[in-house]
Amino acid sequence: MTSVSATELEKIAFSLISSALSSHAVARLALDSGLAVFAYPEVEFVLVGIGYPRDSLRPGMIENILKRRYQMPARFAQWLPAQFADGSFFILLRVPNSAKNIANVPSEAALEDAIALLSS
Image (tube, rainbow, N blue to C red; front, side, top):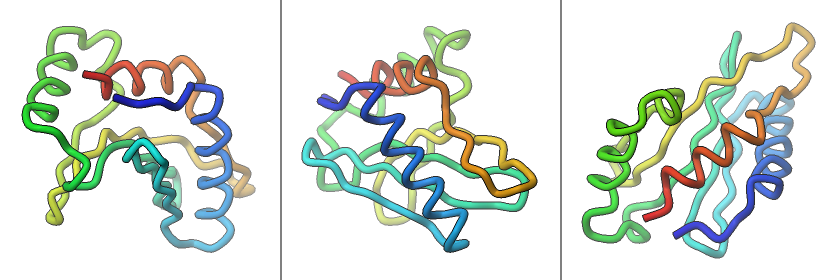
């Protein structure tokens, strides 16, 4: 279960997105709760990922997230599920990248949805 608030997550996302845009590289942060957040810069958008490395996943967690997302698409469809080759599982959101490389961040409501989706 996540122990970070949407407000804290918004600050973290802003910092990571800013860092990713300025360095043109992935920026990542692992939180105490086992949760990890990353920002992956592209030309027209930044991909924000929130999720868990393989060793922080509990049995059934991925299935619960996918089921919750399927049951409430109007709320959770903007967050796309992804499992990486290393076994980590993240939900992803594309955030528009402004022409001046100024960090746009996910809305607090979108981050609240991400927290709710990841909570089991």
